[in-house]
Image 1 (cartoon, rainbow, N blue to C red):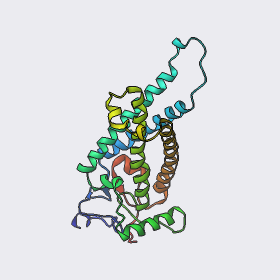
Image 2 (tube, rainbow, N blue to C red):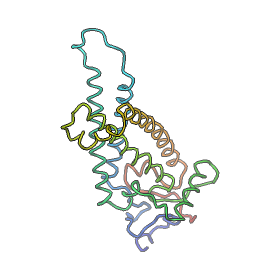
Image 3 (spheres, helix red, strand yellow):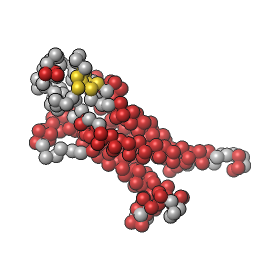
Length: 245
């Protein structure tokens, strides 16, 4: 690859491809601005949804005074609904960008389960996270284990929360609303309380995923052979060694 001949930093990168762009130094442009913007918008929307969703499931104590003087729970619900729309619209945009963006923008939407080398990468990264090997492999995009997590927790998890959330929302908008036409049929299959339970379980799944995601990102930024958090800010992946695996 002539594009990468100016530096040896890319030796040993498992998923290096001729289509990847180097800036001529020691980094490769991985995450486009649209992907990075979606990541932070999605994270913010999720934080607001988790906080307001918890309060909806476990309402705060009754406020003193006349009911007409307080609209706290209404504001909580309104914030939850607006954040839900932000999440859904941004996710639709993310799906669109998976078609028009670079190859790294598509990683969270599929798993190359037919590739034996990919499964070997899953096992190796699992050993790395369990402190059973001295160092991880070098990847431009998500490593195989992270790709599995992102696919199930982020992609499928987001779809599940959008479907159950808008199904519950359609109970208030009525049968003539587009929300009910698109999502309300779920209530014909499952009782409303079961959908509530699934949505609430999804909330705690998000909490658990966020804890693991933040821990893994900080750990990789410090201990791995490439940048992690910095890459989601600048879009460029930098490698810290020029060794082959």
